[in-house]
Length: 145
Ligand code: TYD
Image 1 (cartoon, rainbow, N blue to C red):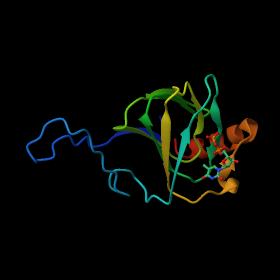
Image 2 (image 1 turned 180 degrees about the horizontal axis):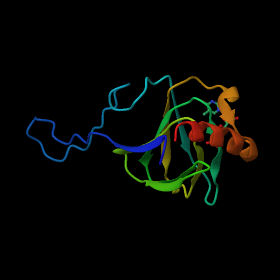
Image 3 (image 1 turned 30 degrees about the vertical axis):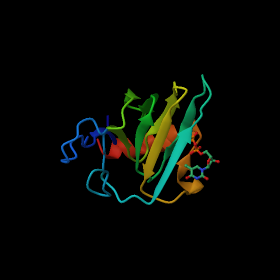
Image 4 (image 1 turned 90 degrees about the vertical axis):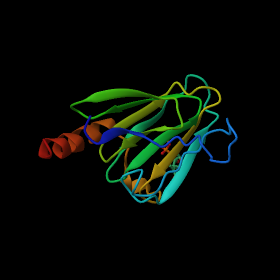
């Protein structure tokens, strides 16, 4: 789907000191392992069962969502396409670029959803009304088709 992609991160298990099973290490370097410079990080925890969050798009912001613990379902859509991704591994991220509508649901009880973002928080970058989103997104994606 346009302006989204799954990114798989490194899973480093060998430490080189001869011991086995020391766990996993995943590095994420700005503009190397993800396609933007990280300006902000936030996380979502303790979401009650049945709650869906999101229901918005961003005009310019780029983000990578990683479920560090547990699982969460991310539905992304544009007026032309839609997709559903289950984030259930700390080695897997979902990149979401500009003008993509997102809804996050089915948070497992223990889930920790970390979001890396390309910009500081700015409410003006949000589009929260679906009708307004649809008009702007049709223009945006029509131009890039
Ligand atoms: P919002 O992005 O709407 O959350 P979600 O999409 O997960 O449902 O943000 C929820 C509230 O938190 C909203 O009042 C804005 C505030 N907020 C910040 O102050 N800083 C931030 O970096 C973010 C992401 C949200």
